[in-house]
Image (tube, rainbow, N blue to C red; front, side, top):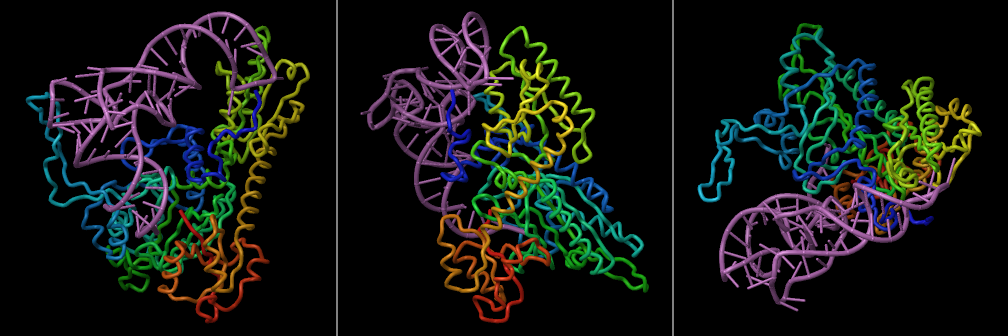
Amino acid sequence: MSNNKSAISPIRAEDFPEWYQQVIKAADLAENSETRGCMVIKPWGYGIWELIQQQLDRRFKETGHENAYFPLLIPLSYLEKEAEHAEGFATECAVVTHHRLEVRKDELTGKTKMIPTGELAEPYVIRPTSETIIGAAFARWVQSYRDLPLLINQWANVMRWEMRPRLFLRTAEFLWQEGHTAHETKEEAVVETRMIHKLYEEFLRDHLAIPVIPGEKTENERFPGADMTLTVEAMVQDRKAIQAGTSHYLGQNFSKAQNICFTGRSGVQEFAHTTSWGVSTRLIGTLIMAHSDDDGLVLPPRVATKQVVIIPVTPKEDSREAVLAACHALAETLRTTRTYQGDAIRVHVDARDVQGGQKKWDWVKKGVPVRIEIGPRDIESRKVCMQRRDMAVSEKEFLDKEDFIQNVPNVLEEIHTNMLARALAFRDANIVACNELEEFHAHWSGENPGWLATPWAGTAEEEDELSKKHKIAIRCLPIENAGLRAELLGSVGKVCFLTGRESEGVAIWGRSY
RNA sequence: CGGGACGUAGCUCAGCCUGGUAGAGCGCCUGCUUUGGGAGCAGGAUGUCGUCAGUUCGAAUCUGGCCGUCCCGACCA
């Protein structure tokens, strides 16, 4: 039975937030758990995270960083050391106050109750981020300028008691990596901050096929306790912005608060300059919203746990075995002789005992880049039927099997390139220059307004007022070569649209997640 | 954390107003038919009705607390 209905309901145009949740469900990526605000990441979702981890971890190590691990629980007093930082996180901390449970049986009902006892003298905070406890370790580890730089990363979970959780985008507990480094000079620390910023930009582009605008946050939007916060901002399909990664130069704020000091080259005690930077499972939410369509998830090939799925077509019992054998043989050939981006092609033969149409749609919804069908007729003609997730579900291409085998890496790369180009075209079509205040105000009344690029010389208070009024924010002040169209940048004036003062640079405004 | 809606089978939901201990569709299992495709027919299994307490002879149904989900707002490194 053919129909032209989409696999996901509602579709994006009808109800974007609901569509997002349905995509996650249909692809079996994650689900809400019984713990408030926390998700269970299911194998198909966790597999994406594992690939993100592997590929990022490789790059961190190439740039000189080492992994370590620090405690989940942070003494409350540590958080109190840096006032601005403490305030920034105060409202979203889970606190551990007891260290044992007393078992009590209700005499009447026989039910068991667990009562927390053994109150702690000093409560612990479940880390919302680890600056303070890693800083405390750095203070012990650093004695001399010869101990610097210290380049540490940890893969960990953190917890922020979010008021409005959303799968992957904002969960109470989430997985991330947090880099923490300490340097002898400001210059070195800033170079580190920018280097990681660039690394994130490239990772998003080259691995997740998401174009981002690299830029700096204004003072209002900065990480609590940072001197400079760099961000990579992605636009998703409802034209909202997602901060996909951040890299902070923390100055000497944390080193002074935590006494990360060392004897410098001239024999004088100096405070280290520190940085921190991170990306999280929010990247998965970002890639879902950036790429998926009304038939479900669309996975960028590099983070697809299965890049090619082979579906046997077995219309008759007597040819079944031959078809299955051909499928497994093709899978084995692809696995052992072909690579994509340095890794063996990840191939899967779907030999489940379910209808072919069902299999096909399952893999469409899961976003597998390439689907291959092989039936008795294809074996005879030495062909395969290829379908690509970046094309319409109904589109098929019959290819000579040997050509296909040769071409698989190119096809995957083509899908990646297509996805990136599509996302880039969408983003560019939805950022416009704005030089007039009236025009600026009018822009935000639309349903899903895109972003504005404006000249800007306002104060923090003026920025705050505009932000609150329209529920927007300056997403970033783009750095040089941020990848924005020259035509767009060319039409941004030199005079601030709000204050009339000479503009200090371009600001990108948008609504965000 | 404020305002609103909701919580019944794996999923989507009906039943609740007018209390008498559960239903549909989809999914699942079995069989037959079908087979380049999200199929059809027949039969079958599955629920301490979110949780705790109260009212009552009796609670999915009435009342209250708590927990959770979704939407709007505040918050969001």
